[in-house]
Length: 143
Image (cartoon, rainbow, N blue to C red; front, top):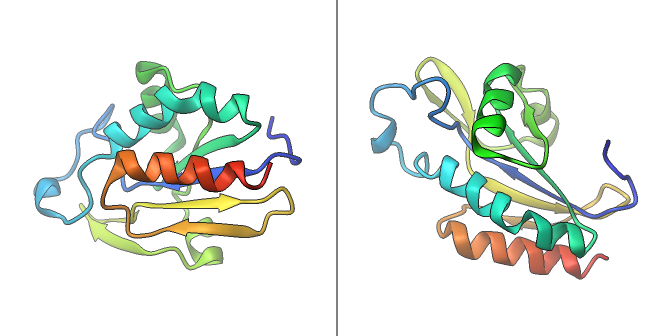
């Protein structure tokens, strides 16, 4: 259950290659590679985020069953959300691209305060480890 009194870091990513393989040509799509790494880096930092009173959420356009299988395989301790129907992407006008006949979210990070106002955005995410650190620092200012 999400504690509505906590600031939240929501990171969007295109897709992980587990459990379903990625479409052909994935490695040639700028910004597509690194979703598993990003999830692992947030997983590794999850205790630090939690200790500082910050909620973590990941989101992609992968199906919920794929998200759940990946989370279990990787020991992801926070929710991975599915925007397979693109409702969140449309509501927030998030950037997308098409790959493998599917619209995918471009990698970005939103830092949201307890009132659900976006207070910090990292886009494009070109340095994933630095972006994890930056999002943590930005969210700490909201606690």
